[in-house]
Image (cartoon, rainbow, N blue to C red; front, top):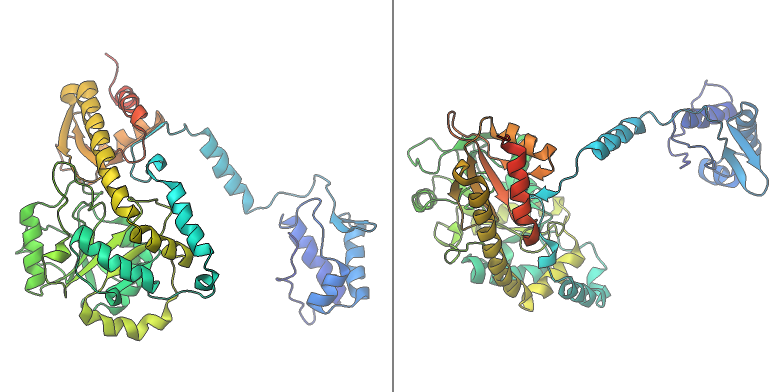
Amino acid sequence: MATTFNFRPERGQGPLYRQLASYFRQEIREGRLLPLEFLPSIRKLNRDLKLSRTTAEAAYEILIDEGYVQNLPSRGYQVVDTGRIPAPKKVRPQWARAEKEKKAPPVLYNFSNNYIDTSTFDTVLWRRCLNKVLHSPGALAGYGDPQGEPVLREVLARYSYSARGVVCTPEQILVGAGLQALLVILLSILPVEPKRVGLEAPGFPQAEQVFHLLGWETQTFDPGDPKADWPGLLMISPANPYKGRALTERERNNLIVATQLERVYLLEDDYNGEFRYLHQPTPALHSFGNREQIIYVGSFSRTLLPSLRISYLVLPEKLLPAYRAVAARYNQTASTMEQLALAQYIEDGHLTRHVKKLRTRYREKSRQLRQALQEVFGELVLPMSYGSGLHLHIALRLPGTAAELAQQALKQGVRIIPVQGTPEGQPPEFLLSFAGIGEDKIRDGVKALYRALVPEK
């Protein structure tokens, strides 16, 4: 598309009309102006650049003489399609990547944790909540509350208590578009020196990017070893999807005691905390420990839709003055409309009913996947953990590393998650998520995985 935003006439570089002709010539040669596109009209050049008609016409005449442009009566000046103008230099690599992706085998069976089965979500109910918001246009007139819409924070305070045992007030809740956006704010107010954070092995890749960007050092820590030299901030997920298992009772107690002794701040990412199938979900650590040392993180990417980018922090009361001092620096990153719709959805009881339905469905999918693995792989599979979260943690008695075997499976259209940091000499470990795969594809997916990894005899 033709634009004159980057046209900067310079003194001593020749007449203005020649500089303008040179600018458009370069735009055409480098592919930013494509064949058959129209250049800005004479009137637009006059309005935007304050150029006289004579100057603009003289520039276009040069381009016509050189064969770059043609003048179409009553239509304007158009880039000529001669076939000799090269494609955009910057676009070629993108085309090349797209072509490469087209040649890659399609993922037929997705056992990764990046997707959910959209058939589990009632879009009619969600649309109804959105429509209620749209019929109240006054609520959408501004940029939204930087801390999060007050009505949503009130609803979240009640819901997080009833569902996860988190005790807080609406004033303690900070809403944002995902964990990364909220971390940026949190790390600016957290009184931790030196700036070092402990992560469970193998870590939280997306969070680590933010820590490093803001100058924090990261290290792994063992929640089972309370005598270790823990840093002042620990990030924990009781159902860590990268680790492959939930916290043990001993590990939970170690962390709770550490907060009670004010040894550490605990950043609790309650990812998939609602989903346990063999017994009732365990309340959040926030409900047991020293709440002035625990920052709770909740989200809806797995309970509702990954595309619904709304997460929230529960800040300790003692951090509220520090947050208020910097709040004006940050705009709200989550959609106001989606915040208000979510508040309506929770207030009407839809979320509680939806989570209950999901537990039943995921319990069945977990059973089907576990049974299929045992029947297809037999003694080759070692179940490591199940009964919580949206995946099974397994080990396979097969040669090769977890990363190598996962890549081998992907070439055959099966995506699985390799667990990092498997001890040397131990069978490679994997996570197989059942959240995004249909029940009718689970068994076929396990068979395809077997064919991809186990050599024919």
